[in-house]
Length: 191
Image (cartoon, rainbow, N blue to C red; front, top):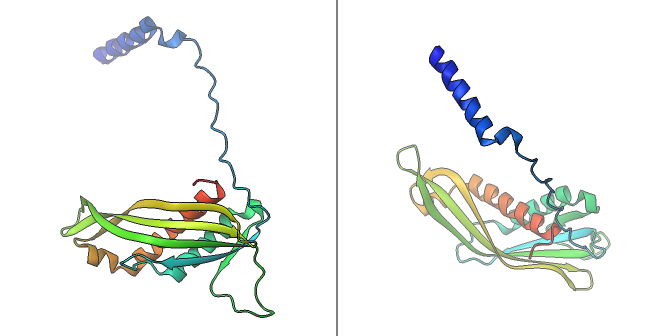
């Protein structure tokens, strides 16, 4: 017990000797400015279209468009933004839209990461490359991302890429990750 008290006192003396308790205050921390929001130029209702042009066609383009529209509605509330996906039939019931977001999946790949804890499994790193463009109703480009690379890791899957891609839950999860990131980058004006 005496040894612990001596060690504690020696530690306190060391701190005082170094002047740690009497240092001048650190300069004030200035928080980073909020991200610059995209000037939507009057766009309030976006039609989301997705196309999978990758050689592998793992992600379902319709599901990706739907998840992007969901994310845009959720994240764009402060901008009074709404979004929808799906085909638009001409006629009187055509929904009003003043913008179109077109997302093209260029490439999808899966690479093994760390070995899994369970025998025969691997943690996978998925990369999805997309281009995206938001145009207003006059066809003017408001925002564009030419070749966005989205990397994400996923839990353990069987040891080969074909088996990892065979999981339909993975497709939804990956489409959700990509969709959320595209919307974040769009609304916060990343190119």
